[in-house]
Length: 383
Image 1: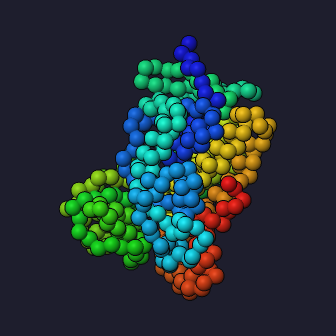
Image 2 (image 1 turned 135 degrees about the vertical axis):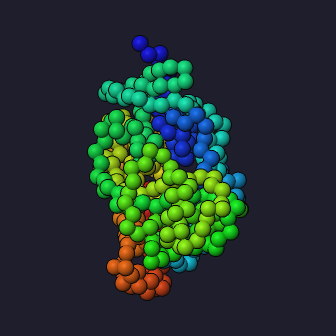
Image 3 (image 1 turned 90 degrees about the horizontal axis):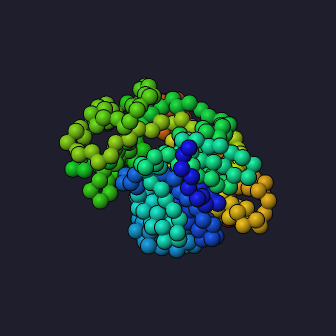
């Protein structure tokens, strides 16, 4: 029989930014929480680097001003690669805020530890056994298997969520049709490219603090089933094919491939098991919305889950979390799908890009897109 660990009221699976912020929210509400994380050490690469106005407001309200002070202010954004200046909004954190994801994760992890959350690293969830009043979690750790019994379990474990799979959450999903290669390089001297469409494909390059991030999509390439990141040589070939530039002299610090597959769980709660972040909704990383939507999920769920744990509300009222967050993510998925066509479509996308360029020049349209990009369109309904 597997050893049993005295469990907290909530087990969170995944110690990325979403899981850690949820742990912070629960501890602020005096709810004990155990976080189970497969990785032995925190990530060091920056998968996402952009915080929206609404996310910055939420972090400020929770005392993360030191993290926000590190962030570089960005007064511009884009829709499908069509850039524009963000309109004025009523917020001290208007605009976008650039900070590497590993720094956000580190700040959230430190706060979770200060608040008394238990984080079990190098522990992988392998099974879920739900009962009417609790869930038994099978976990494999470095010292062997253990079972954790908890009234509630939350999957914050990414787009390929083990929690979502084990609990049998139904999803609506669209298979990937396009793939982008991404790399962070040092020792490289190429010009910045902001969403540049070229005859052979799509390219982005931006250098900050001596590190150049490149992203490239070559028109006509197939989506590959990858067991790991691409080889640097593959990125070099794709970049040369699209831009004509040679980046082989750079030193890779991080290599990644992502595609435009997308989907959403049709429900965010099944009994005492819930989903948040990429486990609940996933899409290509256009505009940094995945990280921001996930952090906002954590704030919403933390409030509802703490109320349920403290018996201030019936467990069924946790459906309010789904009602708040599912429509917000569904809207983002639609907008990401539209932007993918504008950025990665072939010559047939050019007339649409021309029309949208004219529309973005209108103040009312720009204000509307600013609210969407800043996550302010649902600001007062949710928190």
